[in-house]
Image (cartoon, rainbow, N blue to C red; front, side, top):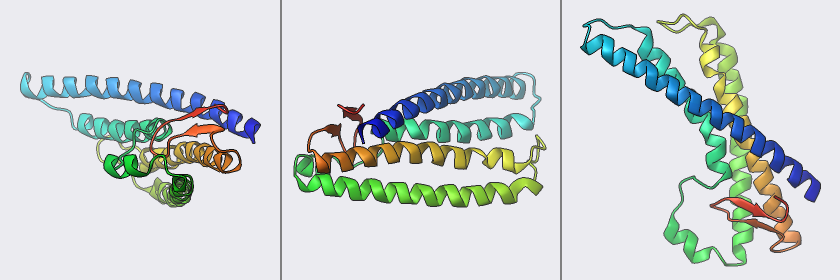
Length: 181
């Protein structure tokens, strides 16, 4: 199990880093487009229709690309009062597995449905850019797939802790570190 967790850790680290770089590039690109749009609209009294559509699409892509990193490093939403009360309890191992398993199953369902949405959207195009909507929706199965890989790694770490408690330091609502990193 160590080899699988280690391999998944390397793959997830590499993929989330690339996704983070791409999302950061999209953020700067979106910033540049919005600045150009504001300048043309308010200084030159002219505007482009495509700038809003492109920046909105870039923002959605950026969010889906940051999503795997957020899950990997525990930057997701949690109730700190509840978590701190049960964090060190032995039952937390089972609660963590159930939560991560539910997340993984939901992500697999999201991949399935977003793939169908992307496939069906190929005949529609965006208004300004005239891009097929499938290009816009393509990020959904990609983003959900990346998060599912991260979730699978976290699930394996949690299961490893059932076999050998403390082997993998996994905070259910935080980052995954430890011996199998």
